[in-house]
Image (cartoon, rainbow, N blue to C red; front, side, top):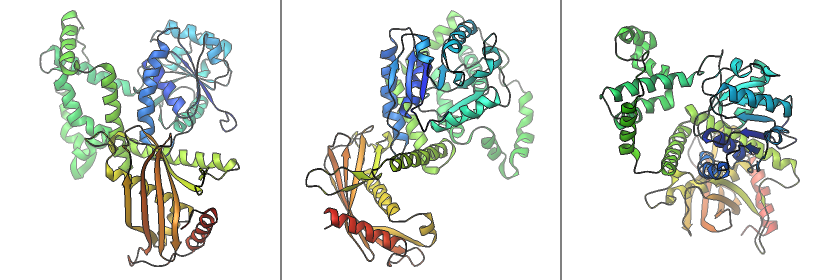
Amino acid sequence: MNTSTHTATAAIIGGGVIGAGWAARFLLNGWNVVLFDPDPETPRKLDAVLANARRSLPALSEVVLPAEGTLHYAETLAAAVAGADWIQESAPERLDVKHRLYGDIQTHCRRDAIIASSTSGFKPSQLGEGTARPEQIIVAHPFNPVYLLPLVELVGQADSLARASEIITALGMHPLLLRQEIDAHLADRFLEAVWREALWLVKDGIATTAEIDDAIRYGFGLRWAQMGLFETYRIAGGEAGMEHFLAQFGPALAWPWTRLTDVPELDETLIATIASQSDAQSGHLSIGELERLRDDNLVALLRALKGRDQAAGALLNRHDRRLSAARKASVESASAPPEAVEPESNTPALIETVARVVPIDWTDYNGHMNESRYGQVFSDAADAVLALIGVDDDYLARGFSWFTVDIHIRYLMETHAGDDIVTTSRVLEGGGKKLRLFHTMKCKDGTELATGEQLLLHVSLDTRRSCPPESPVDGLLEKLVQEHAESGASL
């Protein structure tokens, strides 16, 4: 499939929590989506998921996401899958239902389309039983919320998985290719083990639902989020590493600490106990409020990891670089330069330097963007200008850079999490060691939010003192100054 010559289309079969999450992930990454679900409530439910996704997913990126794809509701399964490149089935976990769906899907879909199931337990060999083309069906098992959590377990035949892996990666997700098929795949087997033990702890009166959740979110859950299981235990072994850890704690595996091979009966008493404890724990919040809280927390955690370029944060940084490269290539293929912004009347040509969404972790106790983050936006804008004049990794490695020595920021309007912001920049002065820039930050609707006038000096990283720029920066800066002077942008 060559997605460079046409807008790719995903058919989403089933618009529940997982199906809606898939629709949001595809749409916000520029795919067109056709959704089929006979439930008349599907549009309402999907709108709620899309509202959360539009607020949170773009906040993970330092660059603008692709233009959102189009959403269409199909009246029939045949119409939904007819032209789809990717077909994501998120139907109930019943093999008979899935088999009937695959029969209809394969009758009407392209032979080269990928048919992926969100199933959390069934194997591809089970899904493909009795179908016309079993090799066309794979497992692509995500985690909720699909539009934020990057992991997708892929199981199936190698040829299909290679293509699927490329698509999943392009969506900003992490494809985990299982070496062989197994019931419940990989991650859910861990979850099932923890879930069983948690049920026993509640049933035996050892802990409440809130206490169990506290044990996870204040303890090992934080370690797992950035280091996983085996790396965590490697550290626990001290300088001797994993071998010492296994020797020290391995014998405990034979102790009767857990009841993982036994399952408590979910009788009415246990169900009532769990439900009442859960109500006491979280009943003061609606499901919508809990979803918003979950998404905001995930964005903050993921962005913290992003700043360290670790775990899922490194994945987000790689996706940002892909998005930037794709946007640059897309605009360069057109006739207009990528940074050009149509000037308003009597306004000089500007350089678009930042286009992004404000993330939740940029806001403060007043509910709006903290003043320090305006400085970050304008710093990022200056970096974009510097990139235009040749300040790249090679130039930095040669021992030269630009340092900000003065900046004046005017705060004009409140800026909130989820706001779509665009910053434009122009050169006020550029010559010798100096570079003076003027930045304007606006909402997508054109409302002016803040301005910043910034003075930078060219420095030697060896002496940490100012010095004239060297080639190619000096020539590119002179050219940019001349272009702005000719357009009326320079003072």
